[in-house]
Amino acid sequence: MNMTDYFLKAFGKKTTISVKEQIAEEFTEIFFKELATACAINMIANTVGKCEVRTFVNGSPERGEEYYLWNYEPNPNENSSDFMQHFITNLCYDNEALIVEMNGYLYVADSFTRQKYAFYEDIFSGITVGELTLQRSYRSGEVIYMQLNNIDARRRLEGSYTSYGQTVSKAVRNMMRQGAQKGILNIDTVTSQQENFNDKLNELINNRFRPFFDAGSAVLPLQHGYTYTDVTKQGTTSTPADLNERINYEFEMAGRAWRIPKALILGDVSDVEKITKNFLTFAIDPVTEKLGKEGTRKRYGEKQFCRGNYMDINTNCIQHIDIFEQATNSDKLLSSGLYCIDELRTKLGDTAIGEDWSQRHYITKNYAEAEKMAHLGEGERG
Image (cartoon, rainbow, N blue to C red; front, top):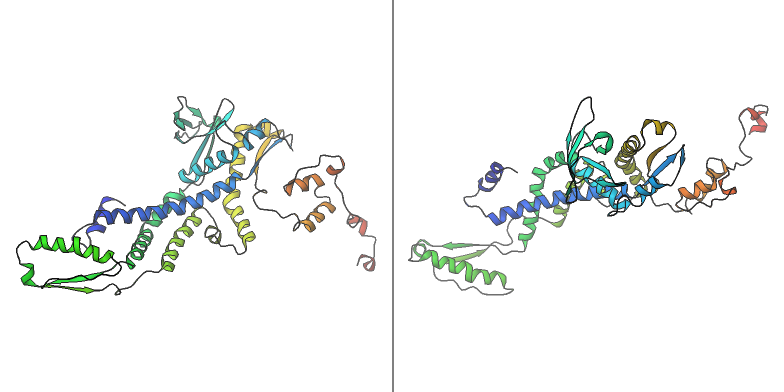
């Protein structure tokens, strides 16, 4: 909100301004904006943080130094989960994020400046990692740089909050005032013209009415010329349901910005499996796919990729898998020869056995080539 909006809002219908009230309202708006934004971004960051970064050599998965770097210790101060959450949080908040390599370790840049070029590599300078500002500049090929979207979702989201955020802060303020006592003090003309009237009125309001309102049961004696009327029960009130509806709308808007299903960001537990798949497809997969491609072209390059050396982000481990619920499906995958025992155990979150027999592919006798079935008659086929 700019200063013009502030003064129009403050003075539009009032002849006086309560700075304390105005500041409290602004903080309320900001609080719910940031809360909704933080919850949405944390949901994405925590989810991507659970993913496994797979490294391949000659087309086969391998757990070497590069695998350890991405999945266990990117740098001495962060484990892989913290590192990935740090990177994704920066990516969502700033719509861009940067990873630099120093002494064989990977670090997420907290701030940087990007100089764009049309036909040459971009230059990244002013890079800060924690409290340290790096003195050198990096070419685009030396860093891992990602943009989330061409349009900054968070900034557009802040714009959509402006009007609706005010209704939330007003609803909070109204609920807080519902239990407060309200009244009208009538003062006749003769009394208002007495000497030292203003001092007497301040004394009445501050030292007599305030204790009267704070007390559970009390009597307030009034002098001649003053008449007090209680209007506490008059007017409309806001209910917790009204406030909850307004707050949920802000969370729903944050979910839309980052493609998080409404039910998921609001904590609805019904049909979680279907909603989670939707979340992974539209919110997580685009981010992990882009990171896998960026990591491959910067850490490996074209020649290594052509030899079958690359990296990708495996999202299969995000969803909780009940092995007993998957027993029938596992049997079908094994009996059709699609996966071996070790591959199935790995996908179910267990460790591979590593024996020769567990790495063989099996197929039942029920499966046969279509050509071999051609000689059978219609009755034999059925």
